[in-house]
Amino acid sequence: MRGDAVSSTKKDGRVLISPSLMCADQMNFGAEVDELVGLGIDWLHLDIMDGHYVPNLTFGTDQCKALGERSGVPLDIHLMVDDPDRWAPVFAGFGNAPYVTIHPETTWHPARTLAALRDAGAHPGLAVDPAFSPDRFSNLLGLVDLVLVMAVNPGYAGQKLLPWTLDSVRRARELRDAGGHDFLIEVDGNVSWTKIPRMLEAGADVLVAGTSSLFDPTLSRVEAAARLNGLIGPRIRRG
Image (cartoon, rainbow, N blue to C red; front, side):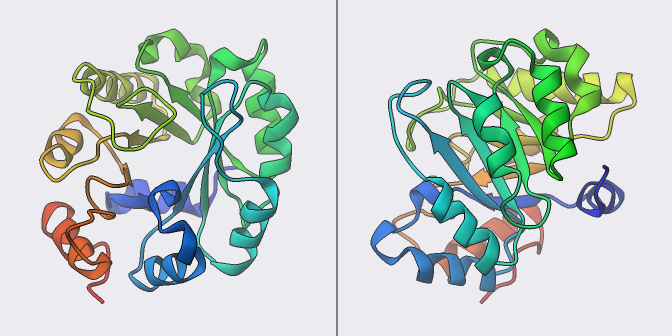
């Protein structure tokens, strides 16, 4: 399945914004999501952590299911779990054709896992940990709709950019062009006001916006969205 979300994005060259909901105000979560959707964000990014692959716990199945039913916005689900073969098909059923991304090194047979995601109606994605190059997963690139480059070590918000990860973004773009693939390239980690131009230059199509930009504590969401517009173009409506 190659959904319209992939083909239309590649045609118009838009930069997509996927707010990291682990950075939202958890005590006012529903209101936060409603405001983000009202601002016209493209996806909703959900980091699913199991306390094993990364030392943190975040969202569960019930919350993701509710978001898929309520928001009307594509879910961008990043599985940071030890057993993606168990969980990937579950999360694939939340919302309308969500993007579900796995870390290929967490499963013995990642090609099978990615195929199962597509069969379940999701857009499969693979994540590139800072320890690896996209070349490590070159045989899998024809199976995915999204390559998520981690610009920080997975697990926590508010970390500093690992500078070599921008080379991973560039390399993902080179591999996409050389292989004739059509996956989107997403960057997650320290997507900040100063780093965004460099990420876009490297080839990012999707930005996971967190505490360094859209959830900047010194700005309202409307002000932060307006500042993002100034960096990427009018892709988020100005409230």
